[in-house]
Structure formats: structure tokens, C-alpha cells
Image (cartoon, rainbow, N blue to C red; front, top):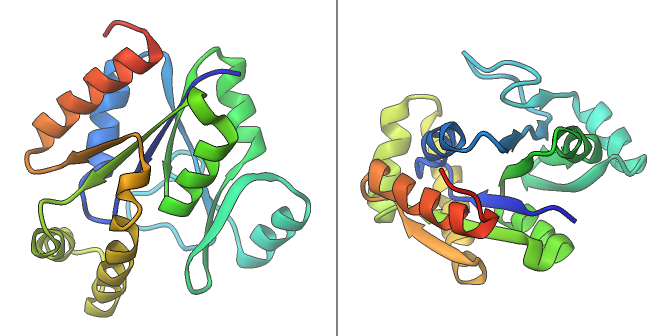
Length: 189
């Protein structure tokens, strides 16, 4: 079984920025594209950022056991990883990097055991997280409150991960992640 890297963080922590920088440092590490039943945000592309599917399609794929893992992250909002996505990455001889919610991350850690490196990024504080969510301008005030409530829940899982990195300064958090991943995958950058 090949090694995998699992990354989790509350929404707004800077995870996507860090993941893009990490991926640019490793030619054998590839982003695992998750599926979701929400609408694409401006600038998002189906098959690149997410596989955007309808709620009905998502549920039918659950029934057909087409997901390695899936979760109803928010009421009525589903995210998951297709089994075919893992196959796609492994067929290239690459290591998958999963960007998941905490329950999905824990599920994959159970599946892959010692072949998984689970990294949890935390914001410096909840107030800093609120500011980041407000500054990015993609969510309504109600969605921000929902994300902050979810963040408190997600932060309780941090001790269960292999590594916890506080994203105070994005370049420092990125460099720390790159070093840890390099050691885990036993590849030089």
C-alpha cells in the first residue's frame, strides 16, 4: 500500500494556500480531488477543484459504494473521495494528498494506518479565523458563523492527528509541512 498525506483544517485557516505551495514542491505528490454537492464558487473548475455533483447523484454514488470516504459536513452539504480518484493517482505512481474534513481525515487514517501522515493546520486563534473568513469575502455572515461553529468542533480533533501546525505565517507553516512530508515520503525536495 502506497503512502498518503491527509490535510485537515477549519475553513479559513489557509489550508488551500499551503497545499498549493506544498504540491509545487513535490512532483510525486498529487492533489486528490474531492466530490461535493455544492455549487462551484467563482473561479472553481469541475474536475480540478472538486467534482461537483447533484445531491441525488452524490447519494446514488454512496449507495453504489463509489466513495473511499464521505461525510455530511454541514446540513445537506456532502463531501467525499471517490475510490476512482485514489486509483487515478496511484496509477501514475504518485502519492495522494487529501484535503478533507476531520471525520474524513480520521477515517482515512484508520484505513491507511502507518501509511498515512495526517496533518492538522490550526489558525492562531478563533478571532484570527473570523477575520480571515470575513476578508476572503466568499461567505455570508450566516455562513461565517456556521464555519466558526464547525471550526470549534474540528479543533477538538487536532490532538488525534500525527502533526499539528499553527498557521501564524503561511510561509513558515508551509516550510514546516514540506519538511515533515519530505521525511514521511522519504523523498528529497
